Amino acid sequence: MIRLAVRCQPEQAELVLAELTVLAPGGVEEVAADGYVEYAIYGAEGELPDLGEEEKVVIAGGTVEVEATEVADDWADRWRTFHKPLLVGDPDRGPAVWIRPPWEPERADLAEVVVDPGQAFGTGAHPTTRLCIEALIEIAGRGDPFGPLTDLGCGSGVLAIAAGKLGWRPLEGCDNEVAAVEAARENARVNGVEAGFDRIDLKSGLPALAPTTVANLTAPLLEIVANGLSAENLPETLICSGLLTTEYDRVLAAFGPHGLVETGRGAIGDWGSLVFAREGSR
Ligand SMILES: C[S@@+](CC[C@H](N)C(=O)[O-])C[C@H]1O[C@@H](n2cnc3c(N)ncnc32)[C@H](O)[C@@H]1O
Image (cartoon, rainbow, N blue to C red; front, top):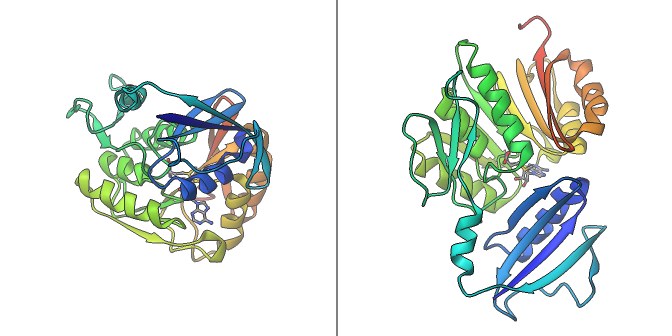
């Protein structure tokens, strides 16, 4: 069994993952570290996508490092070992979300989300996903009424499902990847959460946005979302992530003209998040 690793800069990650997901629809393992993101695909020789013999190749317009290593026969177990449950929030202080792969024990006392790794983006482990969940937990802890929520770029649906477990409903989400929409629907079913997921390319227009909207996208896509906002389609609370900490200002500049003001920001490594509230809605 071969592990084919592709290492890229965080700002390339979205495009590289999109490319690899097409080449390896069975699933891509993700390791986020300081300064780079590594994606890995497992397969027998001949089954893996042909990325050439070079150590550096161009994927999605950027140079990435490629390394193929032989893995032991117990790779399936190691794949499982790799995916650990994740606790976001502190259960002693307020709401907390427990994200786990199906084979790990359940925690009925927490807002639990079961996600099978190897599907679309969104096992919960990615810093940008965690930043969004932290923001949802913070808002949930205020004790305000929940109401509807929209998840833009839903991937596996992990954010909408976590929001549903915390109390938001009804839930809607969208993604431009067919595999993501299918995975999100299946994950909602497995988690007993009612949510509608549709295939929408945000570059072609926005769906109707709920008062709480979460958007874990890249900074350029967040700007596209901002351009599509109108007085009739404007969330009261907007949680954005997927941006780098060097990109706070450009994302603030994109949403500011719509009367969305910053109420919080977060960071894990190079990744950042911003929370906005509509002026006058706080
Ligand atoms: C960073 S992932 C976030 C996934 C999930 N929400 C999470 O937090 O784990 C971004 C998602 O946006 C989707 N996406 C990228 N470009 C898009 C577009 N133009 N329209 C809709 N979704 C898009 C990707 O397919 C991917 O699932």
